[in-house]
Image: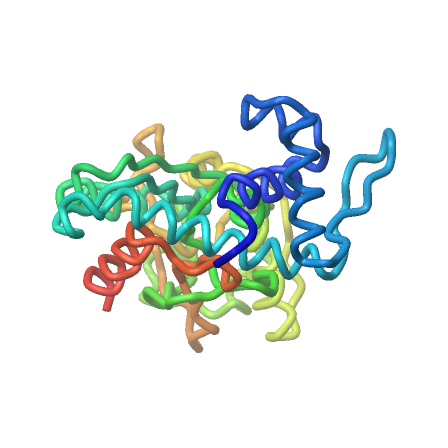
Length: 298
């Protein structure tokens, strides 16, 4: 029989995620002495130092603490699943799920997933976050997201991934651009043209890598951090853009016509994947999302 409790594991995980005893106590709505006592008890039971505590510097984990943290998270996920589903023998999926998504993917991928998931599993409390890929990664690693949709480019270690589809980068032009009547375009055809660069990673990294691989230097006129601003500038003829995701309509926010042309010779497609921490066993609600994603995009 284990000589530690789930409450003690919960306190230890909170300390690891919050970075201090005080912050962990606040997140759990218990006293600091209760949190400190729980961590001390775990260290006695495991006969190992799990944390390094310094005044004014918070708490850091030892190598043993990192190992225990990984296992503790998995145990807590399984314990929660057991509590939620024992009553009806798993007949109805319950619990919570927070799904993250890279900002430019969200309009075409996120809405579809949460709509189907909500209809299939109405008892799961479903929430989402859409934002820059770096912030999606941070929230995933800190446990604030359970699973996320991202471009499978420069993702950090420690993530499992399930590929959904390959996205093809395309050249976007205003309808009256001199090159708009071409059926396809090479990067060399547009390299000297003014370019509107979507200046957020991994979009920027992917675009610049394409030009570099072709031995070309793009003529960047404007940099934006917003997908629709990029398309609006293109719609007014201020330059072309290279975008991966394309809305169903062929107009900018202002109603100006845009054309989308494939790049020839073809450039490397951008894989879109659903990702989750490999250190934590997926909960039943996460597993259901992975199954749904495979069904919709498989």
